[in-house]
Image (cartoon, rainbow, N blue to C red; front, side):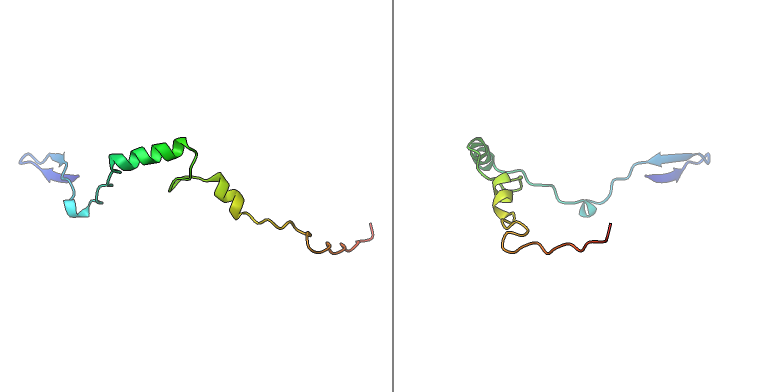
Length: 80
């Protein structure tokens, strides 16, 4: 907003849009063929870019449980 003054001394506010070079570029839409492919993959339960994949989380999780290959050290007793 830019403030201007009239001949009578009253303030007027007018909207001046920012220059186009300061605006972020528009986000391109996916082509229809890509959207259709994503829909087909989702219907078949396949992994999709940018979406949560429970199978990948399961496969990437650590598989070794604490103490699986060695015994837990004995905890010191505090005399209680």
